[in-house]
Image (tube, rainbow, N blue to C red; front, side):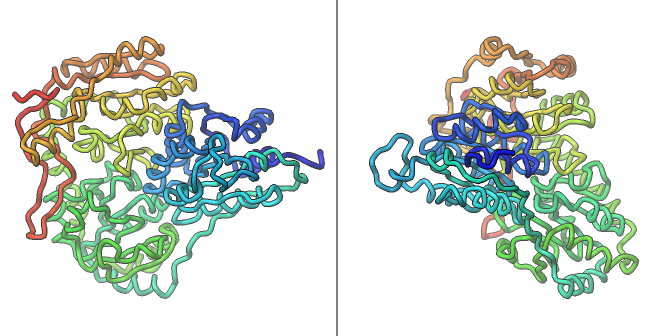
Amino acid sequence: MPETTTVGEGIAKLLECCGVTTVFGVISMHNLPILDAIGQRNRIRFVPTRGEAGATNMADAFARVSGGLGVVVTSTGTAAGNACGALVEAQTAGTPLLHLTGQIDTPHLNRNRAFIHEARDQLGMLKAVSKAAFRVQSAATAISTVQTAIQIALSSPSGPVSVEIPIDLQKEIIPCVSVSAPLPTVPVPSSDVLDQLAERLIGASRPMLWLGGGARHAGPAVRRLVDLGFGVVTSTQGRGILQEDDPATLGAFNAGTLSEDHYRTCDAMLVVGSRLRGNETLGYRLTLPRPLYQIDADPDSEGRCYPCDLFVHGDADLALGGLADRIEGKMAISPDFHKDVAAVRREAETDLRQTLGPYSDLMDALALAAGSDFLWIRDVTLSNSIWGNKMMTLRGPRDGVHALGGGIGQGLPMAVGAALAAPGRKILCLTGDGGLQLCLGELRTAVQQGADILLIIMNDDGYGVIRNIQDANYGGRHYFTDVTVMDFAGVCRALGVAHFPLNDLGNAGTVLSSAFAAKGPSVVEVDMGAIGDFNTSFAGPPVRTPEGRTSLNTSFPRNIGGVHT
């Protein structure tokens, strides 16, 4: 065994020790020592992407689907800046992600010499968009700094952590030392507080669980509580923790009138691993059951969005498992409660279908073609806001990935990351024509990696949701939304991607069946101008005014391609 190694190779060895199998990024003069070591050792798959934003989205989705650590490597300066939007998304979603970025040579740091790839206060920029950010100060501390970063990224509440490593330090020779995977910290809930929570819940006859992304790993404990009689509703990020065809769950139908009416019949709600985000709670004015209890790994989340009657700081799985131990056999939950939950869910789905118009047929054809084994990846687009975030039955807590922070253009690279995390499973990616143009180059990455993705482009010839907002609030003045849409069929031909146009939903089953049979990435382009509009337009998330009025989706004149009809 050699007695010395480089910092770059030491980092590669550490990643291997941590079970990292795939790294995403763009190679550069300021990260070559790390990537050269990864290449020489040939134990980690490196995915060369077309941009740092796409690479970070891929690493994010890879982590969400695999349940492990996502890793992205970028260069310094502009390249690190390119990753920042995707780091915001990972931070919003609480994704455990390690961002390794270069930095200029240490003799030139902080001297404002316009050295190539230099950025003023790059570390401050990364701190703003990461859970934490570090600069390696010496070759001797490089490995321990990255180990610390990995531990913080994985520890609850998880999130992206950035480490910048000056290029001269990446090349330095250090002694070979044994490396070990850092152990993440898991907050253990107080036994006394769990006793209090159990005591308060034992008398409830219609208790609901609201599950967020922080409870993804707590499925068995959730199942125990459901078997005791609890009902379930989820945030969009918490979908699939309880299989969505279970009669005990409302799924992500969390903020509609029917759900709110149901909440009024409940006598307790336990919120687990969710921030009760504004776009899922009518701007924090949704009426939720009382008393309201909260379990979260982040102690600062107590009462942040809704006042709670008791807060449990701790890991969701440990807390729910401990709660189930305490209340099993002691509750008298209404025997009709799950039946009532299922009835509300059916009625909510029926109401949603009435808003879709012809696109209800598309949704059904897609569900039929997909079967039960697929991953559902979504960009921010009209169709996802209206139905994608609620429909398409998810059967596992890691079967759905969406742009939680609301940024467009992230769906396609997320689909690539998901495909590489779950080989053998079909990836369905719902996107719009406007957002797709931000990241279309990553379709070539999908081809190069053989990612088995079906990309469904909902083409309404521009930024449809903004048009709807302009219709609702700006007198129908459509400034700057009619972006020129590229010829997606031509792009697919150039890249060797199978392209299937869909302009008549009577053919949806046949078209989707052919697209599903294609290997590697394929595209179904839905011509919304030919098919028509939704029955109800989406003009932003529903909110409730201080006066108590609810502003929900409102019908507007049909508006496809910028033309009123």
